[in-house]
Amino acid sequence: MSTLSLRMTCGAETSACAAEAAARRGPKTRKRALPMDASLVKDSEIGEEIGRDVGNPARELMRVMTLRFFRYIHSRSKPYRITVGGKAFIVNPGVFTPSFYNIVSTKASELLAMNLRVQIGARVLDLGTGTGIQGIFASDRAARVVGTDINPDAVKCAARNIELNNVTNMEVRTGDLFAPVKGERFDLIVWLPPAFFVTPRTVAERAFACDRNGEVLARFCREATGYLSPDGMIQFSCVDRTRQFILHHLALNGFRFEQIKKVRRLPMETCTQFLAWPR
Ligand SMILES: C[S@@+](CC[C@H](N)C(=O)[O-])C[C@H]1O[C@@H](n2cnc3c(N)ncnc32)[C@H](O)[C@@H]1O
Image (cartoon, rainbow, N blue to C red; front, side, top):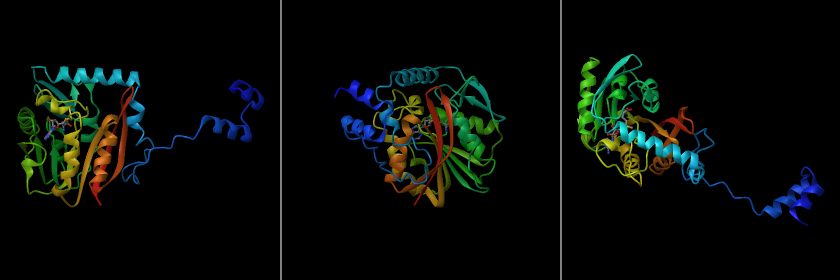
């Protein structure tokens, strides 16, 4: 029987016809099992993201345009001033901006700064501090904040913003991931990781480029436990591209996690915030 005649005979598929049609379509493709502990994640999309992006030209176009925009703003040569949540920040050339001239915002940075889960008196590590925004907001409740960044210009910029905001309990250090805080433990590690799987051409591009294989993301997940206090947590934001990768690597390294916020930031992209803690 041809497909057409089968449809005509069945009309709206009855259960017998549905079974016949299903048999003709072949076995259903099984949903990919999540290679991670997703028990606390209420987002049913996790695990589908990578597959869904493949061959989606609109998403790919958006990704390329966003990447170009990031490359452009990280090559600019003039500092400018922005305001986020009532606090002022200078953005130096080559430093990740929470909001380009207060006109175009990544949302991820602001979202994280406005929703920090800092216990009063906590020791906080703001890893990849950029302008210092997360650490400066955390300093309102924390006992002590250390901001670190691989980009020396970011560290200078954060130091300037610490002064500008009269913050007295935050210091900044230059270095790769946890190297500047060897031997120290924190109650909260705040992290807004780079979000494009491309190779950085300059140190400034490390703000958004995490390398083709996401090496820096995987390394963070491997090393973080060694810098957390017994009840310590990581709070981080990520975009669709990096979410599955980061959650997978956190799970591989014995973390549990919980999604605490999700916003749409571009027509085809969401930004999600998580808390993660070792099991
Ligand atoms: C997406 S930006 C976030 C900046 C800032 N936290 C914010 O919310 O605006 C990522 C930051 O991580 C820094 N970074 C990238 N790779 C790093 C590494 N291996 N070690 C330390 N910092 C790194 C970048 O220089 C950049 O400042």
